[in-house]
Length: 545
View 1 (cartoon, rainbow, N blue to C red):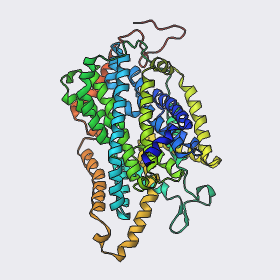
View 2: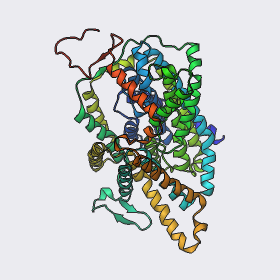
View 3: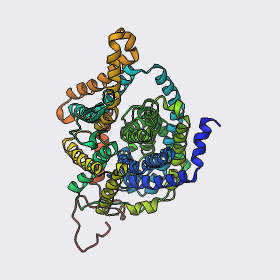
View 4: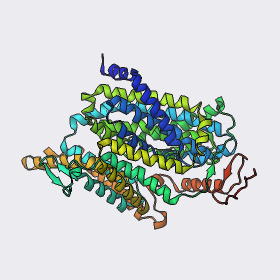
């Protein structure tokens, strides 16, 4: 049998189907509860998958990744609160539709276009991953690999923070953390302080659960307010008409192209793609004035663009070994623990695994779409679950999941320490993404830099360092310098992140105006109760307006 058939045949195992169902439920729950990110739960689940076969473990992790992109639309549409960052743009038109009595239509349309975006991205992955990996395998040596890692870290620094200095600081912290442990070429121990637990370096799962999970948990505990928005329960009709489907065609095409392109940029996730796709779709729409006021085109554009990034992230992760987003960074850590090294050689050494990954993405998307079309009313009730119950459950599972990776209390202590560090990063507005990328890719960069420096004295410079390496190094510098110059030329109060800087000022003003209007308008449905700006009376039920 061919590797493709072998890889797809592995999915016929009953255990894989059960693990996918577990990932499907977890993914929807992740998306439905605001503040619980896909990165956080994938990292947590990774701690429980270390004893599984790679295909079984990937069935859980990838299905969570896919299903979260469906579940996060529920609170974005019904509560005006993004379930994950990828659904930020969904709130612009999804919540206005819900206030107009069209919540069911928005949810159904969101599920359909999300499936279209993910399936299109898997096609791109299937078409581009092998050529990209083949090119990298033929032309990438130590200098090119070092420059590629440098480029990946620089890109994340450039797009993850409004302050370039804070982004650079985060990258340097990550690179420094990557030096902890034993240096492989010389077997020297560095920064271990005599602790045996640090000889093999920091535990990647503990670090990422701390930075993305515990830090978020601590932040919510410190900033929690009892007032909240209850979800809209009057959902209206569910299925779009043919006219509405035809109306969204252009928006889906334009935004899908944006999402596929943004997904190939390391570290540029669905939140950026969603906003850019929404703006591009509005620019080509016949009814641009409806965007931000409950446009079906707006919902279709934002969700198609954000979902279409998944395949691009997978391409850079598996073909180049550079994580496309923070979830893929966790995935790389899991693969390494399983003894699988992502990169060009993966397509030669384990082609059947690559086929299994593509198959899991397709099956998970179809399952998530089916579940999206039948489970909405039940998911709405989950939004009323008190947050303290969620926090206690998350903390327990974070501790158990981290402990399961090494069966050592020291690993749990690492997680809690990095939870406090992550909270400090949030308060100081230092992005965690470059820290994780530096920790993960720092040793790879150091190893390839050492090889390059060892070769340079024996050969001419341009015989050792190819034009590819020079171009990647130049792009790495440009990706840091260009945003810094752009922001430096703006007044301090108008300095923006990459996600904002790629949108024009009129679009940013419209986005802000749409949210301001929603906050100011009275409720349009009696099933909607908004309590951010008015106190609840004790012992009395609020009357419909």
